[in-house]
Length: 448
Image (cartoon, rainbow, N blue to C red):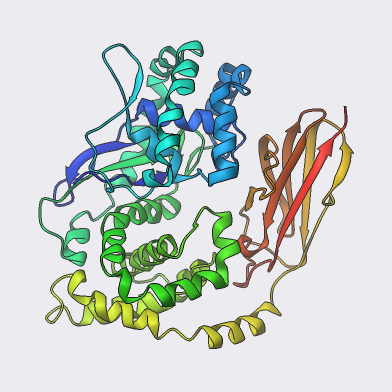
């Protein structure tokens, strides 16, 4: 089986291997890098987080003149109309290959229906995107530029290998009970999304606490997604009700259906169980609370289900045997009681103020500093998403926390332009385990 997995690192790693072998080797993929570059030029927020300054500058300076190329405009259209973003972008890149003439074409070796992320593209989109993509590829001399990055790519691969050695690849088949020899393709996304960063000495580095759970997460998708699909009819009605409860928040992160929500929740609960087995000192309740804060409110239910599975492996040899029990626990989830409990917890959330109002006009072009001030000490993270109005996300430069309550984000604005973003208050965690509560959408225009 070939399966696309997307790991949000600062590179593209791909390999075809068995879980039961040595750590999966990693390397870059030109077509996924190409797609990530197009989406960065389109202004997609999730592709403008690069924490390797020299690489971000290189991409922007070389390809900046093509930010209004037809393929970039089409990318914006797909984001706004179809929500093509995040893993769907890298997945399309994985399904591309270069033919003998050096043209970008779709690879027909993948099994139909084997990649849910790729399936978020309509058949028309998959085909119509190729011509402008090839035009961009040729005119920008992307291939020549890509070959010139080999030194940096080697450094990234070497840095990642230290993390790679820490992953227990045998756990996956053993835990889920899959057939031995299962094969898959793993990809780590793009030149601009960054668990990878530069340390104080200017060297590429990875934070194991950040990267390990992400890599494990993506491997788990290989197992969790097919299981949910196979047993979907046993729990779809209950899952739909839960999805409706958090639909707005989940859609902001491109989780656009109940099945996708359940895939993510199953994976996140599995990661928590992996982490608990391999790092017993980790507090599971804190991990669960973080996932629930991001909208995956069935995480505790699924963690409880997985604990039951672990304790009864003599009865359930593999996860597929246990799925009817899993589905029953989903159906038994008390949504009303959950909502009542959330109202009480909401009283402990932070509030925040933003230094720009929704609908603001004539904002000066050039550097602009967005300031968000919170009422409580916050975890130093950032959660700004694309506008639901279709307005362009402001070109992102950098961000910094000035203190535990003040976040500053620097954008570079063009004149006579409409921009928009969403402050995802639900994804800004407080240091005492709550959040900033509500999401705020802001659109504004710059002056001439």
